[in-house]
Image 1: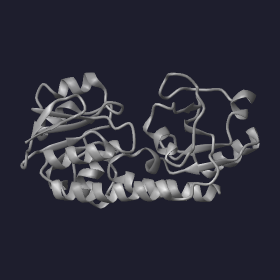
Image 2: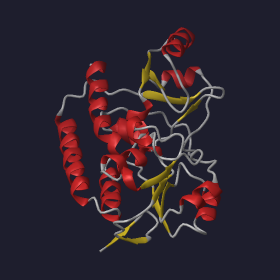
Image 3: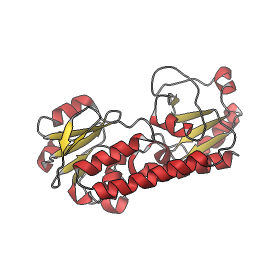
Image 4: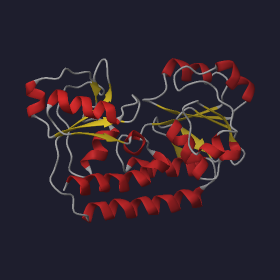
Length: 261
């Protein structure tokens, strides 16, 4: 049986695959599926689960990978993501890595297809299906749980310049599960913005993500004084890491909704 990635590429089951993952959240997923022994390389941002990945060689960042180090690791499979990894780099790696598995989840339910793809290619179908059942159950529970008052939120991912997310992102679609919406700031997926009266009138609160910029409670206090709107720090990994972290991410969303009343 073959398994199809987001670009339509067919992949056969590979029980003895040597995997390099350039996607932190998928590295975590592969470990959860019991595939850590087959991971021969990961990025420096692949930090979960810490006790497992510390023994897997680092090959650079998600965008500045060490091509020659990967070559020496002799992987059979490279796992990449359209948003996180740059195509020219992936093209260079494709010259010597036989199989490039491309992912691009843009909505919470896309996790089901992606987890089954990883489980299928790397022969961990039973664990993948168990995870999918648990995820479906969490989605169903969230759908019937009280959500409180809908919120219009500005989700900030960077400072200097200030940057946010568009509605066409995984994070925005996660927020939509609890009835939270974001302002329309244009067609760019991760736009920069300026604080203005018009923008502030269009939102109920600001969310400062813990990643990729390391916002802290000090930023929360300073921004609340500056804009006069409620501001809260949120766990960026729970909001944006697809794969195995999406499961506790759904529960995290429910806690945010409950706290908002």
